[in-house]
Image (cartoon, rainbow, N blue to C red):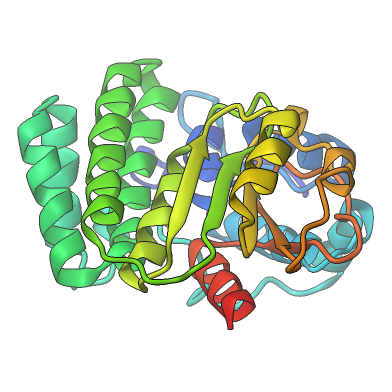
Length: 302
């Protein structure tokens, strides 16, 4: 991507952890895109650390979008590098200071509470946002930006794992309350699970809560669900839709998806996350965001 451009401390760009969290692309994948295709950080901080700038982020977001449509990574990278950088408006918003005005005060308050390890305050703020704005807004405008801030701290100091764990725990509990308190009405449930050995389950709980807001009945199997167990649950419950999440490439083998049992009535398989390493089997739908997943599932339900 050309020579690294040094930047001031104030405009030091974004570390790989913050970019990974916001785009939903595992850090090893970002490193692979850099080494294989030249889609890497183009700046350096005053301390000599490589940092992504806004143009880099837009390229990565486009790379992710193209891969989600079914393009091979090499072809997607070729198109990204051959296309002028998009206008700034679609750029991912990574820090609380860059959020849209409606989200900024809540984001700043949640970030403060998380950094103070104030679990009670974190729960209250997330509950308030969920009640006022709904799951998708809270996830996209509040939760993800604060996780970005935590990742930036980890990039800079190596600290913050305690903050991340507390925030994850409180957000998951809040999402589970939404799913529990709703009154779903669909006859056939939607089955949600992480891929085998995939430990990152928070996006699955976000989808469960968003669907519950729309009166869609869900069953969450959670992290590290063996495909044998998923198949058994499918036979037992007869779900209308099965959603499987993979965040890390090591968990993103698509082959087991083809071995999931066929059901009557038919069951739609949907996958999400950037861990999936290849095009899914025929009939399996791939989504790239929480809004996309909600739309796909509700459409499949009719």
